[in-house]
Every structure is written in structure tokens, then in C-alpha cells.
Length: 402
Ligand code: EZ4
Ligand code: CO
Image (tube, rainbow, N blue to C red; front, side, top):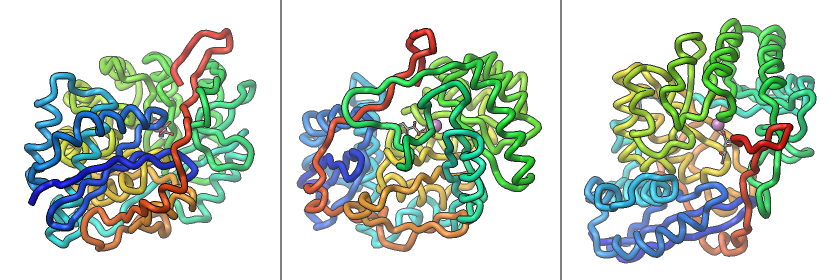
């Protein structure tokens, strides 16, 4: 089998997605998700200018060799842009292989370890009252796990809180918008919020929270310690993990489980965290972390250290990535949980999913391959629109992490 063509389609059904389609001489094509939120064109250009010309003529069945061609073979390796491109190539090759063998992807990853995938929903509200109402709605919808973010008294628009009645979507049209941050106000509010949620909803509901990289190690240690009585499923990205050693301090002070890695793109972002058992869940998504080929290795490495998966599943990752993640989640032994932020209906006009939600779980059907179909004609109706993630400043104007 030979790769005869590959193309990148950037479309904007409500938000931007970058899709790689690889075509072969066997009449089989594969899809990969190359979306990097707010940096879509950088990945598209890298694929078009440097990767696609080198892909043509290669045998798509040799996934491991092609992976290393674009990793070891490339002098300027790692980084979000190049790894997102490599991830999309890898995903499309696995899609082709599974279609060629006429079997759903999970069969090539070891088969099913479970029939369904536990997911967590996003709860948001502009204040505590609205947040509690939203927890109720998600519980009514059958969710067994919820990630809770809320507006904070004294702060304006912040991460995780929707504007008006629209579902939360961090990227906004045009140049980055500015948000304001105050860690002291945040640290005072969050433990009170979880105390209230536990008091109202009891012990069984799994509760998660995303710090979004905004604490120093000692601040994160305080938060993780104060949240201990509420038994979180996880505390996500408590510190910016450019400095892996920062997690040691958090660990020394608390038994709150830690999840990290949605901005990671290689196993080398994780080595200290995994070998020193400083975290409990890896979150690096297939579409940014080197695809199925690399995540199989990272997930296996994590498993030896009692660490589970909890893949990133925000709406800025396309249905192709979500479906691929679900196959992976079904197959591996150390699956933990899957983030599930449903796409807007308009997204499904372009990408037809092969998964569905029911009572707290996602199910994937037995369509061969990854199983998502992509309607190129429809995609043309939704051309790319410039959109960026916000930037964040402290209340005195100092630039801060978003
Ligand atoms: O901010 O995917 O856990 N989920 C998250 C996401 C990220 C976005 C950034 O593109 O932190 O909402
Ligand atoms: Co996050």
C-alpha cells in the first residue's frame, strides 16, 4: 500500500478545526486531528510545507517507522506545533490500518478492557448559586463525575465561566481578550465552594477541578491540602508544569490526586512526574502528544507507576480526536476517566461521530477505523476565522498565566 495524497482542511463550524486526510492507492483514507487552539495555521503550514511532501509514496502500514521519521528524523523536534502535526499523521495512519483490516481501532490496541468509558462533564456558573444549579443539571443528565469551575466574587470574566447564555468556549474571535486574576481571592473561594457542593450532593458524585496552571507550588499545596476533606477525583494543573520538580511540594503536603498534561506533547514532559509518582493522571491528548503510537508508550510507562489516564477532551479537540481517545480508553488497563465537553450541533454537520453519551458513559460503535466521517463539502461552508485564547493579567496589570 502507498500514500498517494494528503491534505489539510481547516474549517470553522462554530470554532476552528484542522483535519488531516491521508489517501492511499488501496482506496482507503484516514483522518487525523491537527487542531491546536488559536495556532491552527501554524500546524497546517508545517504539515503542508514539510510533512505531506515527505509522506507521499510511503507505505502507510509502517506506522512506527513513519512516526520516527517525523520525530527522530527531524532535527527540530518536540513542541506543540510539530507534535500536533505528527499526532495527526499518526492518527490517520492508525485509521487507515484499522479500515484496511476492517475492524474498529480498539481491536488493534489490545481489544476491549471495558464496554463503556466513564466521562466527566463541565459544570460552570457565574457565581456559586448558578454553579450549584448546573451541578444539579449534570446529575439529572446522569453524569457520575463533574468538573466544577465558578465565577469568583470580586473577579470578572475568568477561565471556565461562560459569557451570557452560550456554552463555554475559551477561544474568541480576533486577537486575545484580556482577563484579570487574583490568586488570593481564588484560594479563599474554592474550598468553600467544594464544602457546599459536598454538603448538597453527598459523597458519591466524583468532583474534579481545574486550577489551569495558576498557582505556585506552595499555593497549590495549600489548596490541595484544604480540599482534602472533599475527596476530589482530581485537582488538575495545580501549577504550571514547565518545572516538574514543583509538583514535589504539592505531593509532600496533600493526598488530593493530581492530573496534569493537557499542554504537554512528549514523554519528556512527564519523566520526573511519573518516576517520582508526583501525579495520578496523565492528560496529554492523542492529538498533541504524538498520537496513538506515543501515547501507548506513555500510558504504559505511567501504568508501571500506578498512574491512570484522564485524557483532555475539550471542544477544541475535534470529534476525530475524541473518537480515537475513546478507542484508546476502551482498550488500556490503566484508563481512569475521559473529559467530555460535547461539541455544538453544527460541528456534527461536518464530522459525523460514531459515539454517543448515555447515563454517565460514552459508547463507541463498531465502525471500522476511528469511525468518524468528515464531510469535506460541508466543511467548505465554514471557512477559517481568526480566533485566539485569552491572555491573563493580575489585578495590578502584571502579565500572568492564562
Ligand atoms: O483551556 O482546551 O481542562 N480543560 C481545559 C481546556 C483548555 C482549552 C485550551 O485550548 O483546561 O478548557
Ligand atoms: Co485543563
